[in-house]
Length: 251
Image 1 (tube, rainbow, N blue to C red):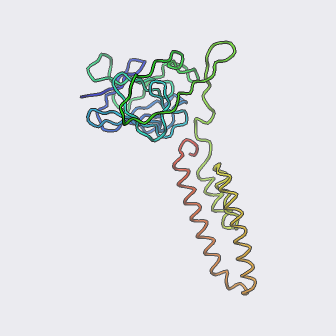
Image 2: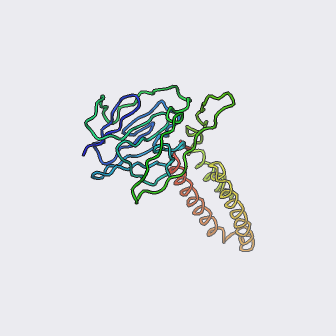
Image 3: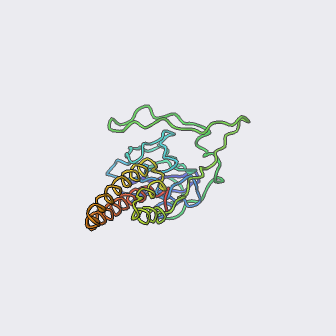
């Protein structure tokens, strides 16, 4: 059985590989001009006659029949289901229908102005009567509020693009951390509580280091300074891992 994704623009994408990703950059299906779409937004997977879709932690979410998916949890879909990613609506079909087929990796042309409310939110469809027993229940769909004038409009969030630099965070954590002020990199990354805790603990430990150093005429510093460097390297490594897991916040 061959599956394909049909868009409201009339284009088809055949699911000819076990895994197909959708996003703005370095994905199989590219939507580069849609600010509602994350760089790595969602993934379709085909296993025999079962097709699943997984939201990859996107900023604005992935919807199946207007129901918001839980991030990183595969959701089974069937022929006829609609998948909403940004301003693009995909419909899962069994191959053989009409319409031009696009090659995987070719950008999809936008069908409406960026910043407009996606068309699928103005006319909700009824959810399927039943789902497979092994499908995880998703959260209720979120629909932008209707303005006082009666017409619906949705402005793309300002955080659609990464706003912070990983190199700046690493420089703050390592550069200042070597002077007994570890934690500023975490505060820059938005993890204020983690950064403040590290900063306080590091200051307390270093006060102890220097008191012991004064009592031992500086001999103990040959042990405490390497410990401080090791702590900074460990904290910077954990911070780098955190920023790599959040590509929509850091570049």
